[in-house]
Image (cartoon, rainbow, N blue to C red; front, top):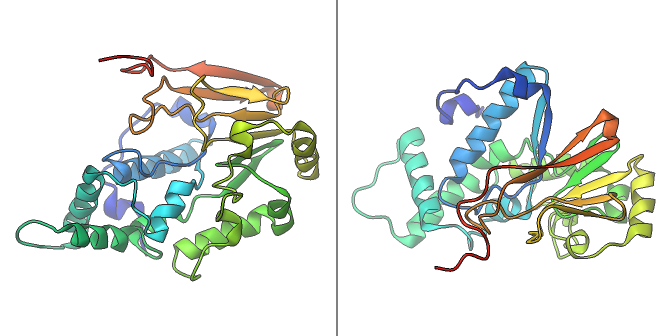
Amino acid sequence: RVTDDMFCGERHSRTAALYALVLPQVGDIMDRGDNEIEIVCLFRQLEQEAKEEGGAVYVLQGNHEVMNVLGDFRYVTRGGYIESIRFLMENFGVEKEGEWTAREAMSARYSLFGPGGPVALMLASNPTVLQIDQTIFAHGGIHESALEYGFERLNKDVSDWMRGKEESPPQLVMGAQGVVWTRAYGHYCRCGPTKELLEKCGANRLVVGHTPQQQGLNACCDGMVWRIDVGMSTGMLGATPQVIEIKDGGKDVQVLKGPPALFETGDVF
């Protein structure tokens, strides 16, 4: 049985007050630089610490998590491969003299991220669609077929695939309209159909990522859809961090901004 303590190192003490919160992150922590496994471990530790303090941390599946478990490494950095090799050598006693070829590096990474691999098993515990009270969180978005399939079933089937129990992921996460791939909510506002979908779930708000919003975090349909991917990773736009805070049973929604990014999108060098 794979546990985080085997691979993720010592836990760091953090402020307990933070963990009274419920924090959903809407995916795509993969393919964002050279320290992906370290970030996976950090979130796993935050999840456990939050649980111990009466809070919760959720990391959703994004299309880049799905891509890596599929073995699609087109966005992996050189540093990402180096981290995978180092992870194998430090945790599994893998030894090799001399340099690693590109083929060997890809094989090493797939042994970690492919279905049933140690990193895939850590990712497998993450939901694909999450509903908290009247707010639904999804990386790309939801559509009628996802409701018919059922969120709980979808989460289980994606998890089973990542654990190596199924040969392929459910079709609802694949393709241009899949729940981790669709950009319908990131580019457009279809308020009427969206309201109908949410009402069927007993929800009144949808929060999505996937499509970077260069103008910053924003909402459409009078706050019914929130687009929260601002590209804050240096592997994307390096934008100023922004989040939404939902309080008072969902009645109060505020945008919070972090310290300015190192570089602004319009900077010239």
